[in-house]
Length: 339
Image (tube, rainbow, N blue to C red):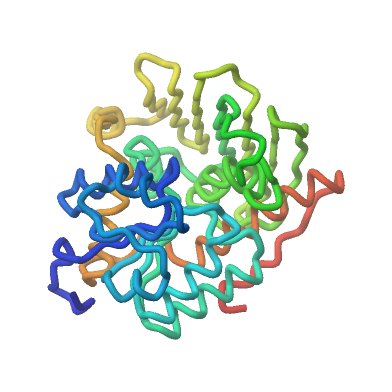
């Protein structure tokens, strides 16, 4: 496979790194779009899990042999391993999809982005909320000016605490980044996608396995985003809410509602109401994410999420965690990924 425009990467040899929860989700999504995983990289001793997740794939335990066997790489490993794996993929010249967060530190995120830029191959971080149909429809409505300029954005992601065992990397905040990096980062990224660059983050959080956090973002545009993330819900609850308010109306989406996507516009035409309300929620966002990645690799589309966006998400998550720890707002340095 090459990355020249017009080449169809549906024939690409996909290499999956990791067979945990997200690795399993990605493997199913690859099969869903008709591009089965060709090779899986696992730690020695985990070959059985790899064969169960991707029975059609070659199983590798050596990184270089794995990279030699694939055309594109999909990283679905613990967050603290992303840097090493992504840098190796960049060195090998392999277009890469990496689960969020890209890294747990801004400096290392910028290092990874520079490595891919130097290699001249695409890097996409899996901020999958940008592919959920209701969130996409809301942003498109904002871009059309349906609600005027965004003034207040409210986002919530409320879940039970995943129980992966006390020895799991997920339970170690030094490895996972905790609530802000693993859960809230979805909505930190989305708020910036809607309301633009952020100049300040103020956050509060309760600790422990059932942690709960709130962050308030001040955007350069003057908009304010209020973001809530929680692992305090009882199992198996998982709820999301989104509300975007502007001078001309409000768009809201609540996973608990029977009609989850609701536009309320002051001066709406019937056509606009129909366009906003007619949102199919059945589309698989993980499959949409993978299709988009392959189109970017082929040169058929500009990326919905750039490497610089992924760095900004890391920057916001780090600022939120720091603010919650110090009890004071954190100013954001609006330096891009190359800064």
